[in-house]
Picture 1 (cartoon, each protein chain N blue to C red):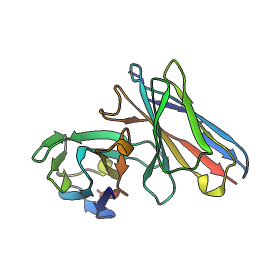
Picture 2: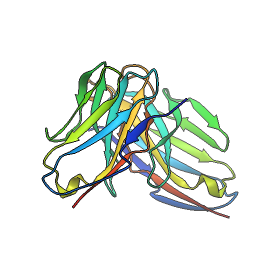
Picture 3: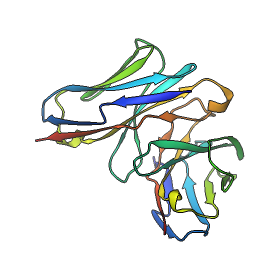
Length: 113
Length: 113
């Protein structure tokens, strides 16, 4: 069974640009979660999508946004990039809404210059 | 405020030298405690889920236990391939916590041959 996949693996942007990160959940999973792991910091919860709707978001500014598509894949958009947005962005999925173990993908390394 | 603290931050062991990693938590109501393993530059790999005090889970050389205030990850006779960062996360009660895992900073384990 294929795990969570993310693309691209690496992404380099400059300050002020926009970044788009993509995630495909494990087949049969309907919930997708996004986390940020900045250097030296723990994983911080960003967003949770289920059945196409945003269900919860962490303590991040509105320039972090996303969506979930009918096939349950998801996209994270970061607008007006800042240097401190440089981090590993991790996507996870679970089979039901918010009560099950979250399985993580390999992450997208975003570097903002 | 819901919080997860892991100790020690780093641990060096000789191959075969057993030890324990600690995860203490302060949450309004525990809905699950999760252990993950993360290799450098990769996404977290799920190990265990624990739900209630007294619960134990085992997998190969790893055993996770849970009390009302903390969890331990016991590593018996570790091998070099057990070297990784071990992450503890909790899910807490409350509408603002739905879908969200709160992570500790992790314990980086190095096992020398």
